[in-house]
Amino acid sequence: MSDIESWIQHGVEMRRPLLVKDSLSDSEKIVIVGGGLSGMCNAYRIAQKIPEVEIHLVEKSERLGGVISTWKEGEWVCDLAVNATRAHPAFWRLVEDLNLSKQFKPSRTRAQSRWVLIGNKKHRLSPFTLFKIGPIRLLRALRKARRGGASVAQLLPHKQIADALTLGIVNNTSDNVDADFLMPSLTHFGPSPPIKRSSLNKRINATYPLFTPKKGTVASFDTGMESLISALQHQLESMDNVTIHMGKNLESPQAAASQFEVSVKSVLWTAPVVQDDRKLVKLSVFAVGYLNEDVSDIKYGYGTLIPDESIPISGILHESDLHHSVRAPGGHRLFRIMAPHSRWDGDEGKIRDSLQRLLSDKEPVLFRNLGVQTIPSYPPGYMKGLSKKSMDCSYVGWGVSGVSVTHVVDEAERVAELF
Ligand SMILES: Cc1cc2nc3c(=O)[nH]c(=O)nc-3n(C[C@H](O)[C@H](O)[C@H](O)COP(=O)(O)OP(=O)(O)OC[C@H]3O[C@@H](n4cnc5c(N)ncnc54)[C@H](O)[C@@H]3O)c2cc1C
Image (tube, rainbow, N blue to C red; front, side):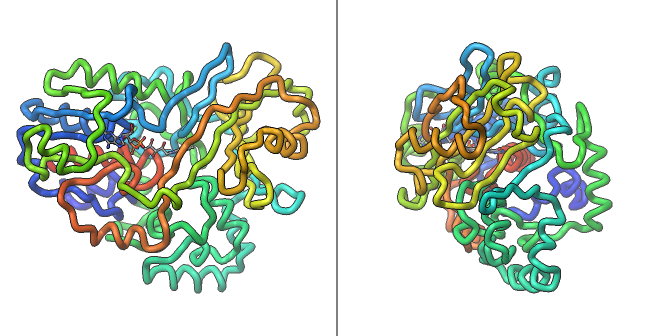
């Protein structure tokens, strides 16, 4: 594939290093460790391209999908992790290949507004929000951040705007997050596109199968993200060259190599790269439902981010406003609440009290604690460190690829192209 074709296929993902050993593509047998979206996509894309390669997908738990799962109770539907995808043709290609196009729909254009709560006031986020920083200050910060290794707080020197942005993506404050990892295009990390960005975007837009997403919209599955995992699992189970091993915890790439009698160069590690447990971001996720009339003051939209660390809630997503499918019984609205453990002590009464202030003084008709999620931490300098990482085996997945599902899905295509 020519350089320009690769950029059209993968877009700004081309700025990210691919931590894959050249020798992986010579393997006759590959062990993929981790059965989350990344492990499943890599198994699918490689198995599809080279039917002669024997693939073993190994998952330590008793279910595939990793952090992705969807909770359902009657007509209430709520995703525990990713609920929608932003635009990237690689994700659209996956949906088409898995025959999921009928249930994959763009979000409601009415629900695009996002707010950030500062003091007692909600401010609507827009591209113009960045001008609050001041154009000269912003340009100076951008120039400095291009030296590499900066935090998002250094890239966007306005604490509340920067925190709102990183909270919405990695649930961490901006001084703890690597700007190169989160926004490589802004910091100019890695190689630059061979043509102007505007013409590249135009050419990328022409490649979307199914439908071309409108600017600012996201897309989701009618019955939640778990639909994607079920379809992938179904495909993998039908492929002759793929074997899935459940309930098998492989402690290291070396352990994977010795158990499956392959060289460590034939191991593709998609499980999180081991990190200091204290630095991982842990948060509890709640599904909260109200009667329409009890939240009639809450504007229709995407959701609100809350940088103020004295409030135990960091984000409220308007699940029933956003998706094409309603996700709540008639006459009700569903909200997803994120409570990072760095600011919440486990007392559910405090979440209910905050909801009275933030959403409605009426009691919710639904209040469910859906469980704890963990997000890797990406401290400043993380991406620079990755590109210098000494590698015994190949590494993929959201620990290295980028935090969103589009990174993970596109990365699997890039890996399969090496074969
Ligand atoms: C709360 C939350 C909200 C999110 N929101 C969004 C969003 O709105 N948009 C978006 O694009 N993305 C979002 N994401 C990110 C998205 O979910 C991830 O990018 C993606 O699911 C990561 O997939 P993965 O396979 O790389 O990792 P994981 O899902 O972490 O999978 C890793 C797998 O490896 C297994 N494993 C671990 N260790 C071992 C071992 N030693 N041996 C064998 N198996 C092992 C685990 O059990 C797991 O199944 C969100 C994530 C969270 C947690």
